[in-house]
Every structure is written in C-alpha cells, then in structure tokens.
Image 1 (spheres, one colour):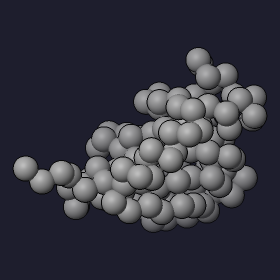
Image 2 (image 1 turned 90 degrees about the vertical axis):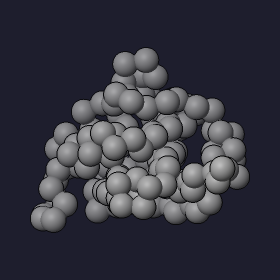
Image 3 (image 1 turned 120 degrees about the horizontal axis):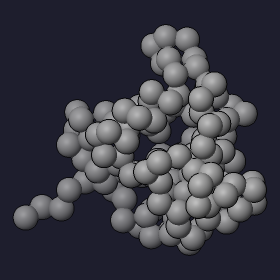
Length: 125
C-alpha cells in the first residue's frame, strides 16, 4: 500500500503581517480536499501569535480571503494538523494550557526537524 503524500507549511510570520497569515490555511485545506494529501502547519517564531486565542479574531482581508478565523476553521474542519512550537509560544508569553486556539498540538522546537523529514514537500511563510 502506498503511503499518503504529506505537505508541511511552516508559519513564522505572525499577526503583525496579516497578508502572510492566510496561505497555509487555504493551501492546507485545498491539499486535503482537492489533492487527497495530508497537510500540517507548524507555527514557530512569530507564527505562534496566529495560534494565540483571540488574535485572529480581528484579521480580515478583502475578498476573496475574508476573515482569518474562517480560514482557520475551514482548515481544521477538513483535517489540517496544527503544531505550535512550545519554546516560541513561551517566548511570546502565550499560556500553553488555555492561551491557544482549539485543535493545536504543542510540541518542542525539535519536532520541526521530524516533520520536515517526514514531509514530501515543505513551504514556509
């Protein structure tokens, strides 16, 4: 049986650059829905601010994008996996127990190496 293809999106840009926040969610959702491959997003450095509870609530870009919260929910709904770098979250003062959006897995920074090695393709934003 063939292994399912896997794509990893590395999100290092945060809420201070809203135009860079949407791509991993939109691309990840389309990878699953349209291509039938697994998709994961690793939030590191400032990217963890996107996964901070409440931070995405006020980010909206003109159509066709709309609200960032909608893009996150769509990606989560179709099965995109979300990984948050523990050390980056701590560096930004994010509470690891209650300060993150639903559906994320907090992982040590070194997990990124494992995710990259497992992925068939890697994109970063």
